Length: 113
Length: 117
Image 1: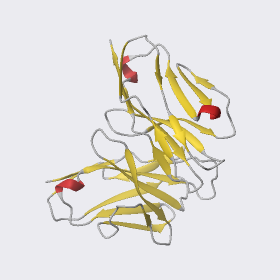
Image 2: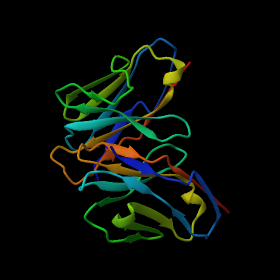
Image 3: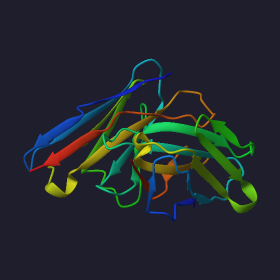
């Protein structure tokens, strides 16, 4: 069984503030993949990052950064200097050997001008 | 990058009718596709795994006679919601895994919003 927990249901920040989204996962597999997706109000899923279980290097892409820590089974996502366009629901997800993607409950981020 | 197209994007139907949603991989072959359902303000829940040339595998609690899945070619999977009722109103989204891929990469369609009156 696998499980993805996003404890934060909603986060509201003022523009230019940083925001960190937490993601904790559970899996028995030694090989797995972790993902973050953004879902704007229009509904489509926007792929942000995929990380395999053997690559614990943190990653930075523009204003986005990810911190992967296997020791705590966490894959947190930080948006630096947030903008109104960052307002969306963000999902953390895990894929196992069956290629079944399990999503967390999602965190709704609202960035106010 | 690879593209997955879903059609229709929006559909409104009367209760009791059947609705078919298509999921196509446009520039790659997909032996395996996945169907998800998302109710308002909730997460995406996996409904079934669609395998080309064989029967779909349904997740626990998903009625296979209600949600018919056909994956007749390497680029097309269809989800038919039979005898739709208002409680079937939801956002349905598919994803596709390229044949032979083991990198964990999945490509999502744009989603189909079903409203049953």
